[in-house]
Image (cartoon, rainbow, N blue to C red):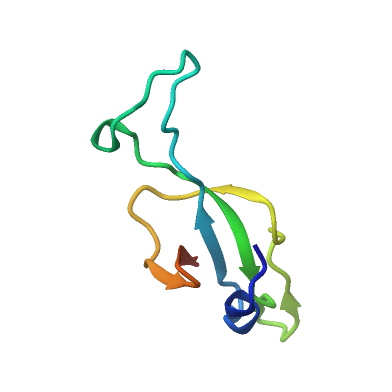
Length: 92
């Protein structure tokens, strides 16, 4: 997953770049779920992480998530961008 575009696109400060997980297309019983009936996926994998935020004391406080971890997304958060034909969302 760590393609060239992801290495070149580095979030700044306390920003995080995530890739939304794929929606379930088949139930456990094997029934195909149509695209319109699929729920919105609110889970994502962290692709890139910024260096951290600078505090009042001038020290950099690192971001608490690491690349590869699963995170929950806000329902209406993030801005969609496309890198190497993959849809990603930079988050605060």
